[in-house]
Figure 1 (spheres, rainbow, N blue to C red):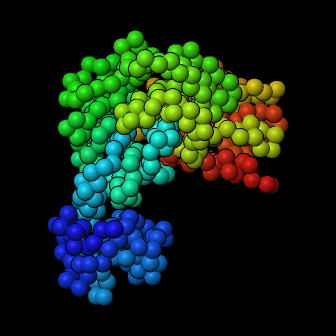
Figure 2: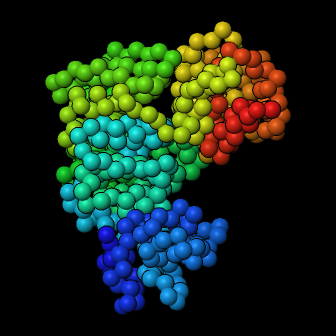
Figure 3: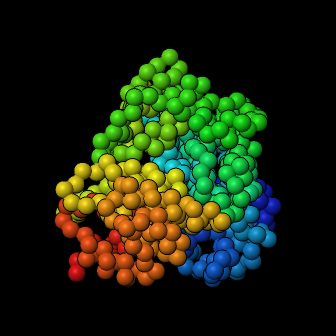
Length: 444
């Protein structure tokens, strides 16, 4: 437990003397999700979190972090609630000397890799990891404040779309191991180029502990060419890797490969398809190895892996095989989803239902056109939604159809889909392709 006096010292806030001994564990900024004993963080966003303090206290919040004192409420008062939250999380992290912390980022697959890494570490240690998509300037501090003194390993996912974000998150989390899964094309609009994306991703190394280790993708030339300030271990297919992937085999619902490194040769089996997951698994195994998990135990644990949310979730409903990969999309993940679509056996057709890929800036037209070409090579029909996806439909040629209106796309899908078809739903998070999937499967 953390007392308000201690937390106020970490963040430079003020607390009334009568509340200094009040203690809390964990933090939440949504009054609807508060758990008894947590710190409610009143953030100023589209709605002012201070307006929800009474509701949070009624739900059992132990105290509040905010920017103005309310009478009768145990509070830490700071000039900026978000910066205060981050400082308190950093102070708590620094007080937990026995925890090994793995920080993880990447353009594609970081959440899947985080889940794989958590599964691997849980084979040997008490492990806490990022829940849902809490990987930003609010989510990372909340994850850190969920760590308990008896936690042995923490796996913390970190996202970004601007320069400086990973530097701040890494300085708060102080990782012992920092993983970069890959350098893709997402966020080109803000970061300008893949070299800029690489530069921004490498910020995760800035908070490394003095004896910290970087775990990096050997198959990415931009990472191999970077000047690295720390000990580095590599994963990938290249001969220069500490942990190398070989002998890949996959079926519609499974993937297996051989991991070679540290004098061992292990067969790794994952209950998910997609050859891109070889790199995700290698990153997870190597990171787990760095914190002391035996490779054979880590590999065995991955057999029980289950991904979260609509990330390459394959299921059968109403005589359709559905590939729900709706959480997000970029050029690289689009290509991977088409590979999985191609793998699925069917006596009917393969239909790709695709939304815009966002944050690509001037690269958007070419990226969507290429996605359309790739989709047409894997699918019999490509239904594309959104203003950017005009180019997806063009790239798909005679197989492509474009829609600006969600309802029109839904009606076209209902008219085209037949029992036995395989349906892929994929698009950037802001396109909410999961809603189209839900409406398609809903009883009519």
